[in-house]
Length: 88
Image (cartoon, rainbow, N blue to C red; front, side):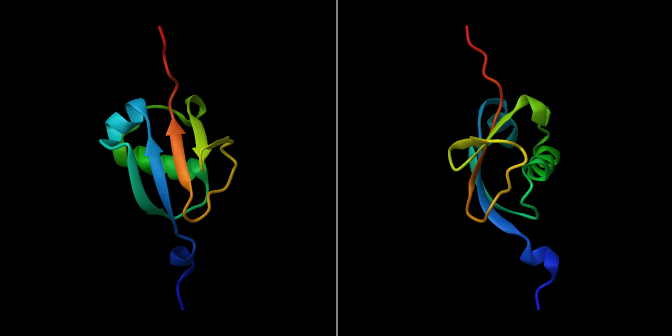
């Protein structure tokens, strides 16, 4: 019988843009996450890659649609963390 932690893990794709892609040294990766909570997922990735942007400065999308941070992730979703863009 699997333990609850393994049963709750989700395989997702994550897209990174701008400074987040630079910090992660990739613009996309597939990974298994222990939570369906976007904030917790970002916190784990932030600790792993040293992201310096707080969540309130980012837009977040699931499957190419902007969502709120309260939206839950499902298996096989494509999650994008999008930092602010400067223009000139």
